[in-house]
Length: 375
Image (cartoon, rainbow, N blue to C red; front, side, top):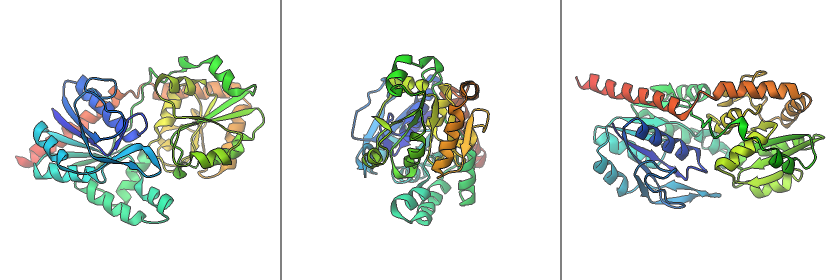
């Protein structure tokens, strides 16, 4: 099967959309298929066959994401159509389509090639957060783009419900995979942990983009708990303001790969504060690392965190609720161990290979439906 994967943003070590697209490409290659990735120019250039890209990559013009220049956003142009004509795909996979993806959808339709659209970003809520409005306009765009797809794949039950309630048709569930070999309890590093705790008993951490919609400022009350050291791993447009607002928090910047895996596994508790996550990959990576999770009772974490078994779900936007959950876990090493072990068991089978095979099932269903209609 020849597949073109179009991702609006890049690079994969910063952006979850492109990371998922390249993991998909890697799985397609493993299963003997022939993928081509279309991604933005700018930043590191992945070469075919490297750890970043297992297949050819066509780079298209791009611009930096405003306020977060590490991420590049693709712009439509002639290279997209040329790549489709050159690869002659059986199916087009659109990762979080909005601008480039919409062009990819139209180009696929002109060539009578089926398209699968993967929903990953809650643009309606992002519009409210950054612009103070515009959610209705964002949803009109989402309906138009995803409504043209043969199938839309939502990463969580909450996202599937949101799409369906906003009138998007043909929505199916497709979660995200996790590298359960890299993110593993065995990565716990006592020396690293000791250097971060600075004599305190409990190490609490957040991993993710530092942006308004992530509500990282809610960690203020947690960071003031006696005996607790809070660390924040990541970068983004809110970084400078958060460093000022959270003087007791240690900011480690962006970390990737095995270094990030050691940091995850060295935490005693992982906290994610963002209420608008369509999936929340960092929660899944923390769980794979054997770390109990505290997350909002909203969005993607509802599927991931089994309350009072693998972690705790709390009221979104309530810093006191996060503090109280961390305080509860701080008071019981036995509870932390039990939650962490259950978290690892819950996700260790959710490998990229497993969810990649689920994706191939979606591809085959779409191709079968097209064949049946043609007949």
